[in-house]
Image 1 (cartoon, helix red, strand yellow):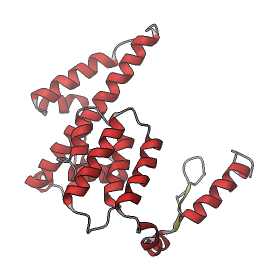
Image 2: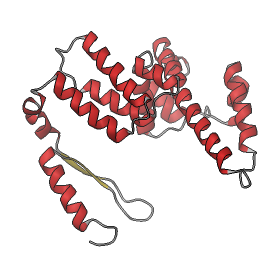
Image 3: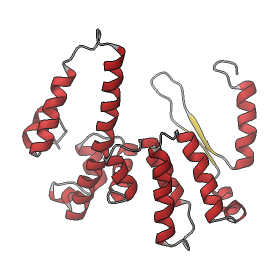
Image 4: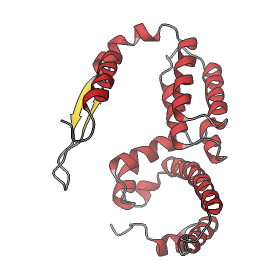
Length: 229
């Protein structure tokens, strides 16, 4: 298919709002920032971050509508994943992220993203925290936890601090989760290794239980400086 997104074609077929956004971005891309003072550069970075957060939220809403209406099949694709990978040229991981966002398009945390209050890192932690709740936790409790995490994130909380608070709140709501989750953690342990890249190097990733993670942190501190081993 020849539906790959390009600046010209997307501007001519998108809605009026997005056409205006694309036009403004064209002008923004032509600006020379080499002589800009620090305060202006910082202000631009803040504005760009706000734009990215809001674009993610509106993208989630459009993707959710596309899934509901069957847009992928109407446009000749097998499914939404192929529309994103084959039509938009996204990597599989990117496509998965877009679909996951569409599933939470109408949640409070995505609304906070739309308002520019929380970052992508905050959103990831909040979503993972809610997913870690046991099934017996009711919707009201889930909503209270989501609201508390959003408030923390919006209050200039770093992702590291938000993660710490998420652990604390989960322990309060579900005190037995550490013991109950031991079997599940054991099943999820894994090591994966990617294929070689163009530089012939490969990357490995691990999913570790708490004991192995503590050991690996100690090993990393002593031996894992770049080039040492």
